[in-house]
Image 1: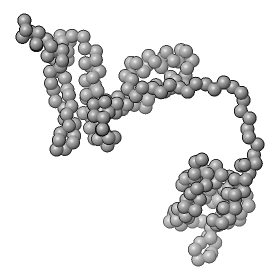
Image 2: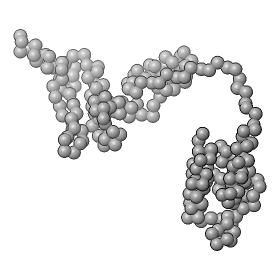
Image 3: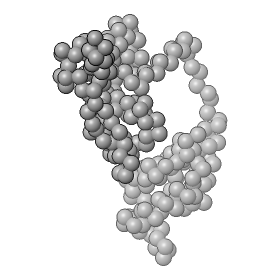
Image 4: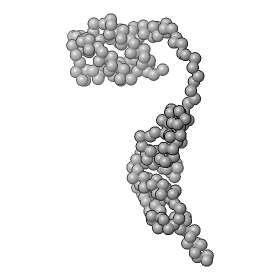
Length: 227
């Protein structure tokens, strides 16, 4: 069950206003419309009074009130409409679903899948007609996914706020991973065997980038010393 939200209440108010239903003010006089403060106050009151009501039932009750009332219903009147709406819902015949085979749920995409792998997977699944699964590989920002995954991999306790504050540095480290992942030999290294690494500043908590020798260059140096 999904209980009502502010959107359900304001939707009901909108329907009442379209019908030009007046609202009873505190002093007992009917007003043709509400000001902003009055609307907010009444909305808050209804959210508290009907906080346990199912959203679908509430929307149906608002329709009943719209058809029956000449002014905004008060809380007791609204409860009567809610009970009517609930009874109507219980008496409605159950819809018979067609006996079709249930398609398997699309497999969850791993959190960290690089762009070339994603594109290849999307093409593969689309060719096989598995469009629901292919759609799972579309992301609004692949880079964002990679940054979050990289941070969680290297700093498991990293919180979203920390990741956001250090996003630029994390982006550089992810880009470094892409470059080093395609490394074939030191001769083609863009940074001459050095790579960026990150460490957390113990005073500020921010991510600090520095350069250090990569494992391949270290191995080459050691081999040279041994020779």
